[in-house]
Image (cartoon, rainbow, N blue to C red; front, side, top):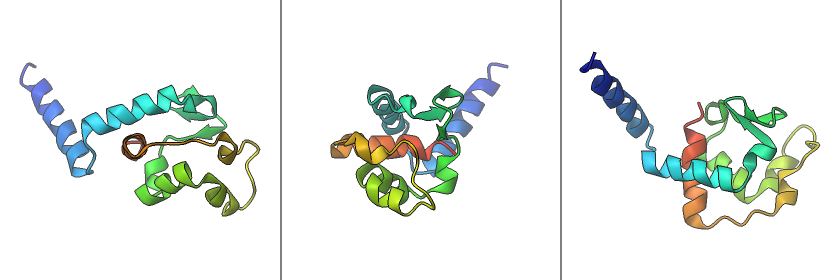
Length: 111
């Protein structure tokens, strides 16, 4: 049993690293997500607003699309078949580069 835990942890680390995501950066991104109160509009793992779930977002969007949602939400909303009732573009987020990179890294873990 003692041997299995490190092996499982090692496999988890390999999976994260092979995805190109540094664990510390994605952890920092989760903190940015929490600090910005993103769960007011979004849900992850049954926490937050179920109207706009982010579970599986990395399987649907590329890292560049995730970045564009965070930096140019009005442009991304305009490309939708219909406007959402709650618009991310009205939030006027101002991410610095580190916050943006960390948040994208965190969202990339949501497959």
